[in-house]
Length: 409
Ligand code: HEM
Image 1 (spheres, protein in one colour):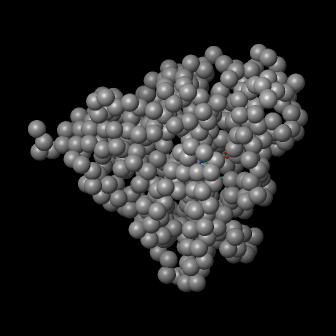
Image 2 (cartoon, rainbow, N blue to C red):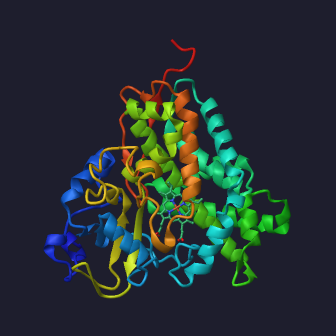
């Protein structure tokens, strides 16, 4: 039988050891943000003996360095515990310099304004449709809205028939909320197989596919050559993993917060032009992503001894609450950062900075523009018990909301 201390290597000093199981702590499930805020007195980098042992980065300054310094912190595994998948996702599992041509293809082609041009209209249309499909005055927001809209946007961008949305739902749920490894494995296998078969079909007549992101992928060149089928598949799976549950999770925190804060909500209804900077502040306050790295060489990092092979977690939800970077960090202040909005690390930093940020921001903005004015008196349903989901993305599991439906008593 192994004990917790077995997972503390000799080079880790006792005063840097603190428990934190970001995948399973009961405190995450019961009171996520209070629990994370209570970690403010922990060191900028501490070692958790949970999950086989790993470093946790908690300040914005160190997080930015870890995200940016691939010579010490590699993306060979972006999960904690270490998972060196035989299938390398493009571009996330490549360190520079191999990362650079794929990355350019993402920023210049796949996520270019041209490739994304129709997606705001799709987002608005589908946001309205999802709202209209709700029972007037009440919904379970995660299942009825937040899980569905990002799937619609992904399908539209890739030119997949929108009728497949309901098929994608259980795959995303199994991969990100599955209770067991088997559920995770099944979700991944089913999604990957569907996308492989779909892609094969598209390649028979690529010109008939109307998806801007798909067309950009077809037109992309890596060192002068077209992408192989295998590369396209690994990109498509990357978008499935990176672009759906993240947006769902962020939406769940934003709506939970706004349902309990009428003053913040009213400001956005009265002054919709403030929505973009409010979105930035809520991305900072409720950052969701826990991102892994592997130390690739022994090093002294700001006085902390790291050894090659040590796993590191950049816990952006804790980083967003770093008082040394954000004064009164737990307060949601839409005017933080003044006109341009607060600068934060919710989307990472450095070479892997999220290329989907524009798409994510658009979905969050459109959600607020469309829903808030149509949900007067928004609040939690009486008796609703909120539980947070631990894991790679922190999320509100279910969010039962109600509001004063027009025409109801
Ligand atoms: C609120 C929503 C989102 C959050 C919080 C988020 C967060 C992040 C973070 C922190 C990273 C850096 C990972 C690392 O350093 O290893 C990242 C990378 C990435 N994200 Fe996002 N993301 C979001 C939405 C999206 C969307 C909508 C897409 C695409 C449809 C997307 C696609 C990607 C891709 C492809 C990468 C890898 C980039 C690279 O390795 O160069 N993300 N995201």
